[in-house]
Amino acid sequence: MTTLAELNAAKDAALAKMTKTGGGQEITRVVVGLATCGIAAGATPVLKAFEEAAQAAELSNVRVLQTGCIGMCQFEPIAEITAPGQPKVTYVNMTAEKVKEVVEKHLKGGSVIEEYTVGAVTD
Image (cartoon, rainbow, N blue to C red; front, top):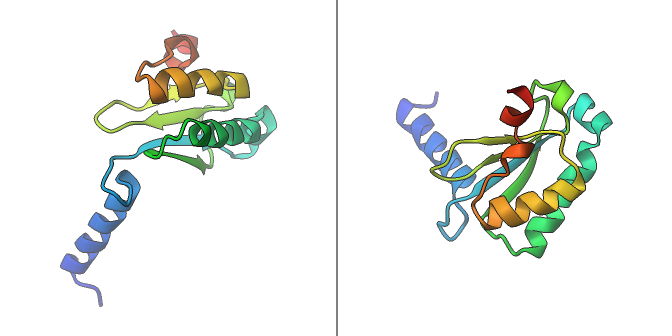
């Protein structure tokens, strides 16, 4: 049987892996929804565009990941960006072209592109 202390240590280790690079630098996570609705709407090229753009920009603190359903099918493809100390930003109706702008302005420059966010399409 695993003790509570062992479970807490495992949790802490997993959180550290999710939030820091090997060198201790905090990680920004880009998560693209690739459930059936996302794939049908074109999320696969969006994921690939984020991976390529982050690598080309040498953003060593950015991890591009995929997930299943985000729950807003009408706004697919969706990408969520979670940066250390910042609220999560949900970009909707993404395209490979929009990805280039998001990488340049948001991931590199720190400025959210409001017109691409879920708040802009639901207000």
